[in-house]
Length: 135
Image (tube, rainbow, N blue to C red; front, side):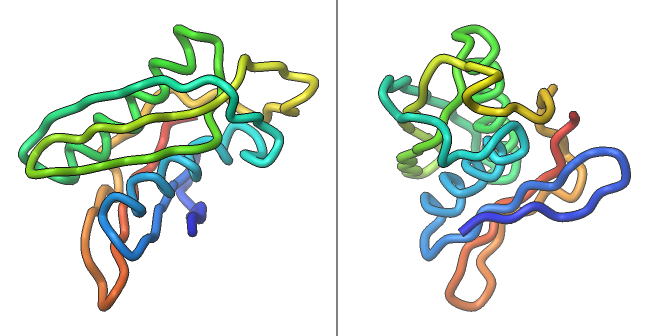
């Protein structure tokens, strides 16, 4: 499950999952949903991403910024994510397709993930991974 949350000029993205891996994957899906509907993106091409950081909140920002970088450099949009976090290392695969503004009906360009309202925490039986992205 993912959702957006209100922030003055930018957009908050929040991933919610039963595991930390799922929460990070859902945060990535929320990032895509800022740009376009993830359901309109055919997950036909895989891109591997590896990040490392001993702080889970900083790892979330680094993960989302790595996705933003890959989208910009490859001209892609991602819609499916598999994330594995072990210790301080994140290994992930993002699947997507070449960006097509007409097909994907893109809304905005995300410039980067920020430290604003940054939180990675377990609440009851769910994990939450969230931050504000600059659009």
